[in-house]
Length: 64
Length: 255
Image (cartoon, rainbow over all chains, first blue to last red; front, side):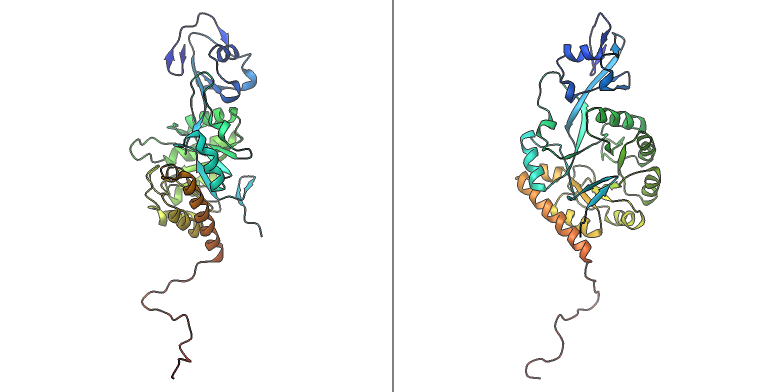
């Protein structure tokens, strides 16, 4: 898996929800993109990712 | 009489839009308060895991967030970033920023016009950052933009109203609020933009690179208010080639 540009090895398919928990992200402050598709917050439990996926976890930062 | 700034279906009292980059998080609230700011822009970026500080924790209650699509190089990427911003809970106002040029950071008007259509179809209120070009502004208005955000000078340059005449054309020829975005470096330049009839001014670097950012935010608030009041008052006429006395030219002592 590519997570925020870095290669990761995951052995099992896991839900987006579990990935966020495992990686210690704040759910309220993050949004998730899997292979270019935005995953709505309501779909974190049903959407899953595997070792083949490219995942971006993003949040707000200061900007003009 | 109320003089609200209207963008889409929202009304604002303040005409100072603040870019939130380059500040320490601790200064954010003070700058917003001193500037009387009601709209602040943000960017969407990869975040590191863990309980790192988040800019949203420093935004005062009631502030309207205006995420930008910086990092987008085409219309499709802008739509993806806008959707991510919406998932982050900011509402539906988005500043479209599509930049391919890495030296001057100039916006791509053509892709921006395309993005306005995509975002409007997806329910967003789109505010396009653009290179001041009247033809492009008309197309943006037609595509469903809620405001036009022409640049004064390259982003972060503090060089002032280099594109003044071209921004004036857009103010005169479109019905949308025109918000000068990028390049404003001093309160006097913000005031001048407002005197011209701009609906609002956006600034970030001008405040963030001042020696006293809190005081500079206050200075921008006053300048923008002064410029707006002057615009509504109607500027006095300009004479060339001669002067005109302010007092009657009769009744002099000793006549």
